[in-house]
Image (spheres, rainbow, N blue to C red):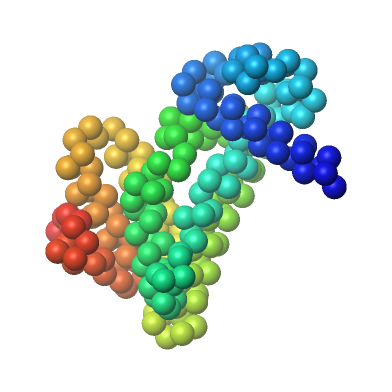
Amino acid sequence: MGRKSLKGARQQEIILAFYKLAKIEGLENTSIAKIAKEMDVNPSLIIHYFQNKEELSYALIDFILDRYTPIFNVPGKSAKNSKTILLKVIDNLFSKKWDTLFDDGLFYSCYALSFRDEKIKMRYKSLLESLRHKLSELIEACNEDGSLSVDNPYECADLIFTILDGAYFYLSMIKEPSIAKAKLASYKQKALNVVGLQAESPLASGAVVLL
């Protein structure tokens, strides 16, 4: 058991080093040799756990999912009921909490690989579907307690993530913080409209809402 745990910890260490280096060097310029140099280890140690960069890239997709799923964890004090939890999660999704979980440039570099590598495509598909199902479950919980009446929770979750994905790609090109903040608030309200909810008032949350 101990050796298995150590192996897992070492793999996580390698993946994290790969992630940090790829943020700086770019995914295409990051090699096993460079990762080994950054970690101050022999390249053979990395190859022991990941035979090649392709395997490392697969592991990086799984790492993305691990980074994103905690956004659905709502602290006990905030988890008063299903509707409150859903509002909090959507607020998290359309906030800096979500945007800073994973480097945008690296995310889109990995995404581009999905057009050339079927395994990466399937991992990305699994990742995106997992996030949609998690949000769908929160919407369904609101249906069950009567706080919402949504015909197709998964379809709504899918649409919200479609808004989210497009929003962050576009916002990554906007340099003015005030404009980006206003647009993000507007996109969040559009996402809330999908399930018939409203964002907190600007005075209560300090958000800027575009009409």
